[in-house]
Image 1: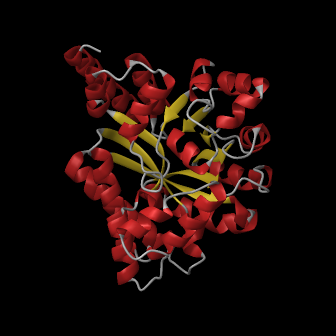
Image 2 (image 1 turned 45 degrees about the vertical axis):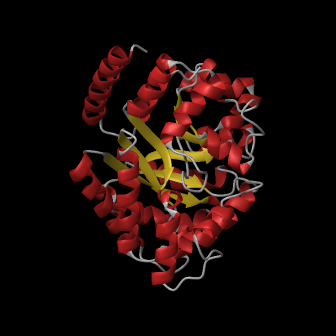
Length: 346
């Protein structure tokens, strides 16, 4: 039950977000202004038109709209603006640390300079850090539908920007017909370079996709992973190997990956002892915020204050931070959670 005290706790509690696409944070007004300034045609003329586009019947429709709209992002200064606005949005929700993904193929195929894009993104997040204290690190999320050959070019970019804040390597995009296994060599090279590994899997394809990600790619975290519940042996494996599931409930409902709130397996995964975190994925595209996701964890899944704190601490333990920074973040957030719970009596 979402009591007034628990509502206040959710709004004010320190948070961590680990599954967030930069392009999916773009505000409708920003999207329209960038499209006009960069002379890019998008299928909307006003904010109401953009909002109308954000209605999907399935994951394929979401990808189509997503790829159509990100064309408005062209220059490094555009990425800097997106990063700054996203960072301010996160800081306003009491997020202390975030990992944000960029989808490089959407931009490289348009002839963009990803080094410029990343430099702009990093500049935007550094400005946010100076103003708010929010720390952000980046991951490159390669679209699996483009095949493993082109991934090597993107991996070179990721390696070249590690010193600037790129910490993770991932595959995303359309799971259907694009299994993880062909990317095993690329992931091994990314790991050898010092990048941390994650993958979108088990969102719209079943346990076979998850098995491929954990066994062939050896990922530490899975984006979504909700269909793992269909295979009890996989659930046991994920728990025993401490593979983290970055779950995005509203996203799953909006794309049709989950049929309803009642049938979403977040609670089942959590009760099975799997380390799950709570995230927004593409907050603008799915009409959500991290605060909203925590509210829904209470309203739809019966989570209490202990559970919400566990979700935050899970995210800290799963963060791709050096151990000293991770320990510092853990101490800070634990202290804040304890003080807030005492104040509000939750």
